[in-house]
Image (tube, rainbow, N blue to C red; front, side, top):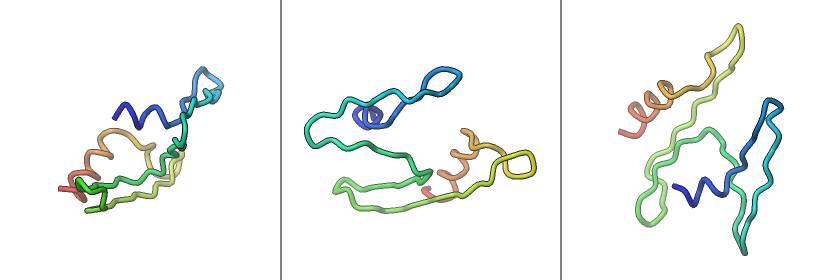
Length: 77
């Protein structure tokens, strides 16, 4: 997991300033999309789940760990 986290941009401080990535050779930045993908050992997709939310005062709750766990339980297991 650490090798993937190193390819995802980080944001710091109250202004959420982007911390530049240091990519090596043919490495490419990973941009999280909100998709949950389950791969087999060969890298083929076994299951895929995506949940679109509309966060805000009159919409859905912001995405959190309990919602992620429900998505995994419902779709992947």
